[in-house]
Image (tube, rainbow, N blue to C red):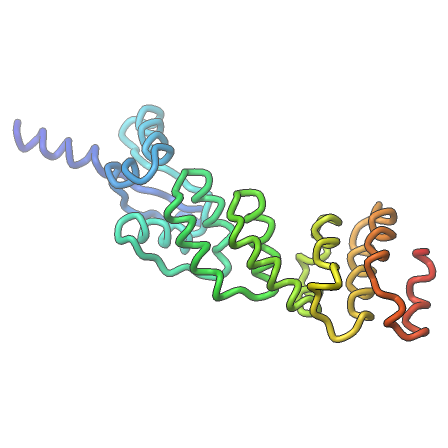
Length: 219
């Protein structure tokens, strides 16, 4: 009876977690519950709903889930650059503040143009203000590189406008700023009014005459 009770207790204290690609990881409810009320509640709810299955699914990649569990169990985690936005969303959703800060701190010295643009949207939504400021600084200081990223043309007009402040912007010439604004305008319909406002921040007197002809149709 004692052995049966011990076995039952051991079984009930462990569960499996499944990530988006179907990979499963063994987890212990005491660890997840201690780290996050949300994660603990998820396990409890799943037990009630599925009785003895005791499995919880997370909409994250296997690499992300491995990083999350490594941090919860060991206090350290190797974070892949491409997993940053997903990990910040997970940390915010489940109240894993220490993990969120761990991810944010790890990326401040590893930013590139693509990551900065991707992370910027997540940081502003989720309240990681310091990392958002670092991402903004990187984009402004590497504007020409950033303007070639696919994420650039998805920026809201207000965000792009904040990058175009001449006192902060680092570019080789003003033509590159014009090209970036026109590329942003062409990426989606309905941007005419916003484009005209953004063009007001381009320093046309610094440009050659032939470059100015490209903007005539937007006047």
